[in-house]
Length: 198
Image (tube, rainbow, N blue to C red; front, top):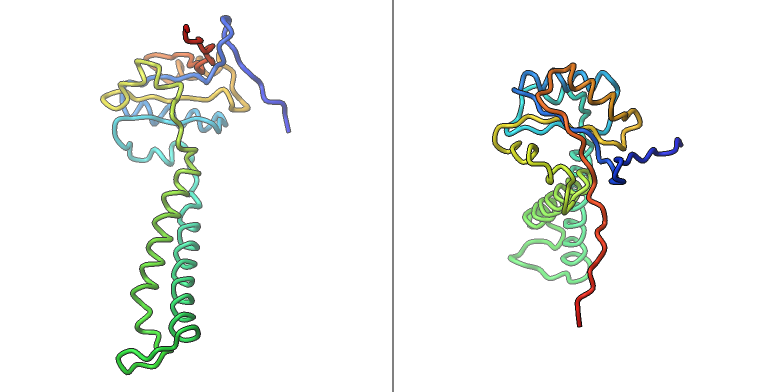
């Protein structure tokens, strides 16, 4: 495994990456294609609304979350069914409503609910894990230009953790792609804790 480069500014701040603003969704999509074609892997696009075709422009692959959710949902339904069967037929075989203890039809509602609850929690927790959440603070949130992304800004950010990252090369690529502004984004340095006066 190659050594991971650590980029710092002249003042010693860790570099998170480089972000660029684009004028409209078409330019954003065109720039995303250029970033994808350049071979970058640790980058993302931010816009105030979904941009049609952006997944293809970014070269995004299908997530494995649906497979995880399906496996967990079926596992939950199986556990629910087997638990009920054990309790009703083997552990406490009590005849209810003149039905045999091994009647599977009465087990369907709880089996369904077990499947639903396992599916819901695996989807939620899987989404958190895959997206690296929760992240309480993100370096981009300290940039005023980025805060406008929920209103009318279109931004691409490439992380310094990318193997191909070179701040000057990224800046040049963004400028050639038509960026209206390019900024270096730094990580927040750990601030020394101030002791309270006694």
